[in-house]
Structure formats: C-alpha cells, structure tokens
Amino acid sequence: MLTLHYKHWPNISKSLKVPSTSLYDNLKVSASRYPDQNAIYYYGNNLSYAQLDREVNTLAGYLQHKLGVKEGQKVLLFMQNSPQFVIGYYAILRANAVVVPINPMLVADELEFYVRDCEIKTALIGQELFERVQPLIGTTTLKNLIIAAYSEYKGNDFDGKLPPEVEMERILFTESNHTAWKDAIQANLTPGEHTAKGDNLAVLPYTSGTTGLPKGCMHTNRTVQANTVGAYYWSRTTPNSVHLMALPLFHVTGMVHSMHMPIYSGSTMVITTRWNREIAVQLIKKLGCTHWVTIATMIIDFLANPALKAGDISTLTSISGGGAALPEAVGEKLFNLCGLRFVEGYGLSETIAQTHFNPADRPKMQCLGIPSFDVDARIIEPATGRELGAGEIGEIIVNGPQIMVGYYNRDDENRQSFIEIAGKRFFRTGDIGRYDDEGYFFIVDRVKRMINASGYKVWPTEIESYLYKHPAIQQACVVGIPDERRGESVKAFVILNDGFEGKVSEDEIIEWSKQHMAAYKYPRQIEFRKQFPMTSSGKILWRKLQEEEQAKVENKVN
Image 1 (spheres, one colour):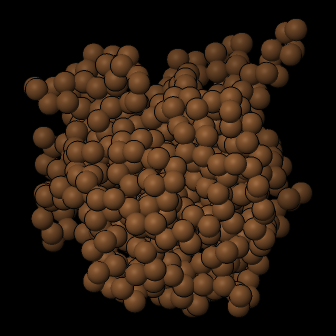
Image 2: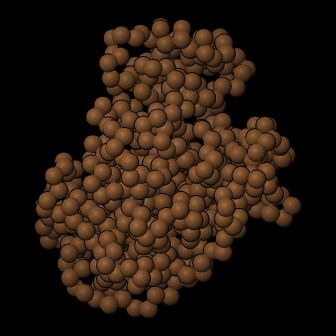
Image 3: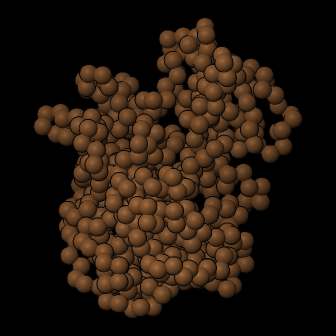
C-alpha cells in the first residue's frame, strides 16, 4: 500500500470506521439534534430538519401503503435539484427501497433502458419531465408516478431570476396512478419499520455509458456512508456550515458532497435548480455560504462575471470539486480574488465520488490529491497489470470502503473491471495517471481519449491546460482528428473571453501554441465556438465534438 502521502496527511486519523447504519439514519439523527435548524433554503423558502424528516416519513408511508413499494425494490428518481429531490431520495431509503437517480436531460427513448434494466414500477418525477415518462406507462413495467411541482416549495420574496421550471405552477394530472406530490405528502401515512442496514443496497447511479450501454453501480448504505463521513471530516464541516448546492444531485459528487454530507452534519443546503452565476453570487452573499462544491466549467463561468467582487464571496471557506482538472491560470485567478485555493478531488460513479482528496492546507494545482481514508491506490501497466512506481504513467486502480459491490446485471463487465493483487481486489478506473514522490496523484487522461500523433502519445487534458494560459481563451476542448500523414492530429475547440472576438485569430493561437508546446503536441487546427455540448453535470462532451470531426471526414470520402 502506498504511504508516501502520509507525510502530508491533515491532522486527523488516517482511517475511519464506517457506520453500520443506513443513510436515512443520518437524517433521523440530525432532525433529532437540530429540529429547528434550516435544512434547506430554496429560492426564498426555508425547510427545517424537523419538517424535512416529517415529509420524508409521510412520503415513505405513501410509497409503502399506497404504491406497494417493497424492501429492495428500485424506485426511479427523475427530477432536477429541488427540495423534492432530497425528500424523495430519503423517502425511498426510509421505505427500505433503492434509489435509481437518473439524469433529467434524458428523453423517453433513453429513459426506457433504465426502466427495463431495473424493472421499475414506481417513479418520482418533476412535472416538466412528464411527457418523457408518459410513453413508458403501460409499455414497460412502469406503473405509478408521483409528480412534483418545484414552485410549491419556493418562497414568495425571492428577488432574483427564477428558472422556468421553478416558476411553473402545478399542473393537474387526472390519470390513474398519477399522484400529485402534495397529495402524497398530505395523505400523512406512517411508514413501516426502517430495517435497512449498512450492507443493504441503497442507490444505483448509472455510468454515462461512454464505452457501451450504461451500467448501474450497486452501492450499499455502507459504501455511500464511507464517502459521506469521509467528506464530513475532510471538509471541516460543522452544523453552522452553509452549502451552495450547484452540482446536479443525480450525479455522485453533488449527491454526496451537497446532500448526504450536509445532512450528516446537520448543516444547511442552499439548493439551486439551474446554474446561474449571478444567482450564485447573490445566494453566497445573502446567506453566508461557507462551502461550495463545484466543477471547473462552473468556476470558469463564475469568474467570467465582470461584476464579481471579492467581498461578494468573502464568507466562503472552502471551494472544492472534481470532474476535470481546473486550469492553473483559472486557479490563480480564483486565489487572487478570494484567497482560496480550489481543492480538487477524484472519483467515479463506481466509487460514489471521492477516492482522492487534496489536503485543504497543502493542495496542488491540477492534481487529484492523495488517497482518501483507507484507500489503497496504485498505478499499473494497463496491458500486463504490472505495478509501476513514482513518476511512471499507467492506469489508476483503487481499493477502498467506497468501491461499489459491482455493476447491476453485468457479470462480464464485473470480471473485466476488477483486478486482484496479492489477494486484494482493485477497481480498474480506466484513467491514466501517475503519482509524484510525495504520493500526490495526477491524471493524464482517459484511456479512450489518447491521441496518437505520428506515434507520439498526446493527452488532450495536458494540451487544454496549456491553452487556458492564453489570455484570450475562456474554455478549450481538444480532440484527435484523422490525419492521412500523422494518423491523428490535434484540434482545439475554443471559446474566447469577452472582448477578444475579432481581435485574435485561429492562426495566432496556433502560433502561440508552437511557442509553448512540443512540436507533436500543439494544435494543428483551431475552431472558435460560442458554446460546447455539455452534460447536465457540467462536463464538456468531447466525444461529441470528436464524432463531428469524424463525420466530416466520412462525408468527404462518400
């Protein structure tokens, strides 16, 4: 087990006992300890921990007594960030069932796969998503819907711009087996005994399916608790902390760091349904937000706000996140503004968020951090499984208490995704990285994303980090494009900062790149864009851009 990082470990235990209780028990304890504490702030409205726990229990009672939800049954959670997402998630747990949180950007044809894969009978949905779900009623196992109107939980005195989904009044649904959210709550049914423990399945987040069909990651209460409790201690959260919830809750990072961890600590969640940089500033300033877990694309957009001042975000004590490395130039801009270093972490759906954290007092830029509590992380040669040393580049593998039980209904994938070393079972992340002499891990890129240019390995993430140092560049995405002579060449899609359009050309950026990168690395083509295709969790869909380039070549041939 790698221990180089122990020299830089914070002044806390290197190991944590994982609770044997369920995630719902965390809410029950916090509601008992801090009944009057604001659990949720939502566009002008507050919901106390006592109210949150009460609604979770009454909704769980409705799921059990009216809809027949049984222990271990999988229930679809298909909605945007809202109080109802939190209530729905914990109500499913309270009913001893399993949460299946799905990306609200999916359409009916995509959604059908998940319903069939889990044989789902009951779904909690946002009303704006009804038309995507309705075609599945009667054509799949899906039978029962509880439909939420986000507007029922907003306040009346919020003076900022509301997302349209939050402004939308409640729609009346008259179909059988379609229940309005408020009606389910007001039925005031008492659920049966909560029997779920640590090893019961709790949540089934799905991977994005970039290498094939989406795969459900089976996480127990214990695996999720490992990262919930770990995040609590690492982030130095207290019941007085106020967390800005900007990341989507269906995604594991937002799920653990913006929902489970605040609930475990009894602190306040400030929920935003849609990302809006002006609203984010307003909420941080008004509510005194202390913690913000985010991603690089949000930070870049946030800092591009010309009206942003240091005093607006002076209450923040922690800005952290993952997903993709924050460009060094952006990190320096953030530090110069507010004196805070962006603290990066690393994890996957298979690890229910973090396996690595940067120490808050000693972070490194564009770095995954050091292995988290009780995590054994190593680097191996992907083809042979041979373990590599400091500075050598290979595949990151991890063993730890947060690793999923396995993929749901995917025996072949399970056999391929784990490797055993000296009797220890490691998950193969598919990410290429290295660690330095101090035990800090760095990502090089995804295995599938490498560009082979004239036999040289080119990692797009590295090229992007260079491009972000150019003063005109706000965002960059690098892909490989077919090249008859070189096999592949590097192309960069670029979004310019305000004020640079028409003042800098593609050729000028190519020439600048030549001065800052090796000859085989620099982009041969630059294309300016107004925006990039994005996932709802804020990641750039580089694969879609690459597919567009491949389609251009195929069209020329035909």
